[in-house]
Image (cartoon, rainbow, N blue to C red; front, side, top):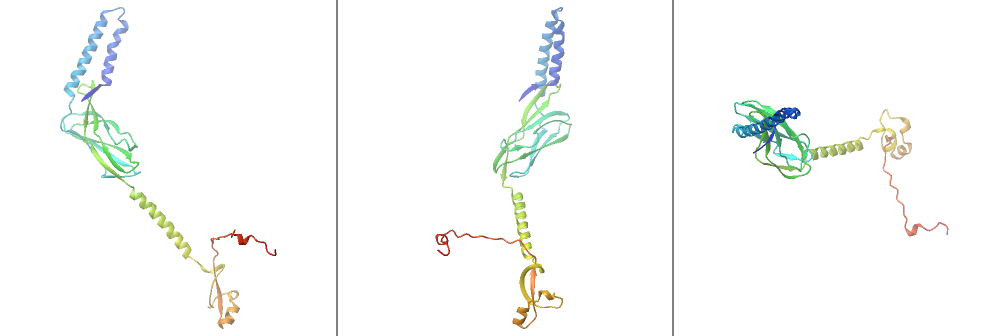
Length: 253
């Protein structure tokens, strides 16, 4: 248990220093200021000793998801429950795993009314997998007369495991699967009967254009045959260069 002086203490201390500005003409004021400062410090110490312990029904709990995922923000929930009949002004600061990335402040100041609770949230992002450990939660609470902040540690250390981000991997897999399906559909969706690229021969049917009739194929098969075309598509062209010794000779030498 420890304490720090509050703003109220320093304001009262500053008030006690005002008489020093005229102490050159009234030397007895110095003794009064010294006595005032001693009494103020004594009052602050007494205030600390009568306020240094939180009641047993004032608790702070921490909760979060059972598992964290790499690269995903995870929310940490701190709940301060005050079961006592008195209000408490507190400053709460959580001890998170230092390996994780803190996305929001982990410290907050607020008042917990009598027989109520107050919640505080902050976000962490784990950069890699592994086992991590949360420490205790530091709690400062204002003393009865407001001269000091008393400090104590609540909550118990907690462990958490960080796993690979399966959701993000699944999203990437679905995107890749969708891209492959789109390419497969594009390959299969060949529109016959249009374009100028020859695709195949088939029997003539009513409605076919006469200019598409292949007379040579008709004479050979003794049946009207028409050419079938498809829309021109981009094709992969592979050029192979043979740089072997047998190809270096000149023709006609």
